[in-house]
Image 1 (cartoon, rainbow over the protein chains, first blue to last red):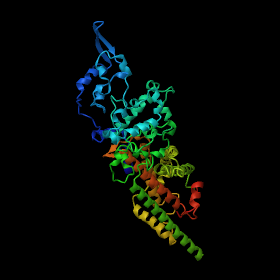
Image 2 (spheres, rainbow over the protein chains, first blue to last red; image 1 turned 180 degrees about the horizontal axis):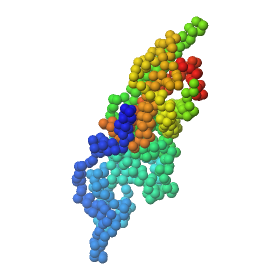
Image 3 (cartoon, chains in turn green, cyan; image 1 turned 180 degrees about the vertical axis):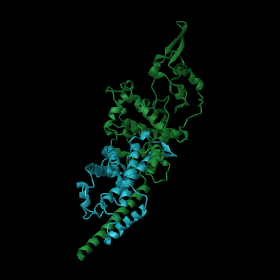
Image 4 (cartoon, each protein chain N blue to C red; image 1 turned 135 degrees about the vertical axis):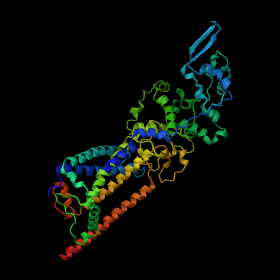
Length: 333
Length: 205
């Protein structure tokens, strides 16, 4: 009976879903929230643009008709204030990147033809950004499979929308949120055919079907970024931008599920600088997740080896004594 | 004497085969690296075989428990509290000393007593504690979404995994010792023939 009582107590502790919510109650799953409100020095100036581009509806006085006109804003030129003021470019004025001529309404038709800046235009050759190696990022992008579509309209902005993109992985204290954010960038085109077909004539891709070979697919999608398998790791830049052709994507489980897991040079690159002293290989992964094969424990390895060798030793000694005894018996006979 | 009915022998051989597959694939999942992938089972294949074998093992375990509840086989595992420690020590003494001095087996096999006290204890620990914990923790690893996220600040998955590999390790050691002690019959092979034919031919073990 004691055994069954023990099992009844242990089982829910290990696998009961409700305890996951208890963990939240006890504060184990703290989600960092930005409570600060950013005040842009250009807030007033930018509001001239946001007045129309900040939401799906805008209005203006048509002087020819002599009345107020209400119209819908095209979805791709709606810039959400909240997202912009949380983004990496939140300190900017709209006219830092766009022509000051946009201040006039109606906008002049030729403004549509303005050359759009890309990352390297501002971040390249600048000492302030030298540590991020933008030149190398640019070189990687030019070798990536995405670059092949540059003539079709692919650019940095397809992944890093300058109006809302924010660096997440190296500043995040919630890796799961970062993974979801980063993967949503890929899925913006790869799981949305409207966006996908703008750049290619290929047929629609079903991400779930394409990854059917992957065991525990849902768990992988929640716990690693697409780029873990679809880029070539480069230690000198923070995040690899060399997106590989699909044939070269990582398919071998041991690339991650091993003592020298590639995750330590990608997803856990920033956290791996912190140390754990409890004997787990790649232990930093354990703060967020658990990866079979990558999270061995050296103390348990040593202990199990000692126990195994001891048992073999005892069996060996027992065999020796049995042989000696049988020899004695034969002699006595 | 006829001690091992057909259902028990079928259960036993299936359990043995599954144990071997689970040990090999389990070790492969934990220790296959890029360098040794060629001589261990590849990770993807190991997962597939481990999951499939574990499912069959779980069904086989239910058959074992049901069989023990419904047939007289269950009584052989009952440990009497009276004198058990002394009986256990007597058996240990026999294995480590007495059998080399030509002493008689302290608990010869009869139709009423299939197992000696040491066998009883290890079989109960293995089949009624280690295997259920192994199955429960295995379910937790197979469906990580149902495993508790954190338990007193430590990842629930790590605790579940440590429990799983610890039980797996102890059962592997049990299997090793079990195979060795089965060579202690009247002849080294007689106990193996017993579990194949159903008839026990020696009372030395």
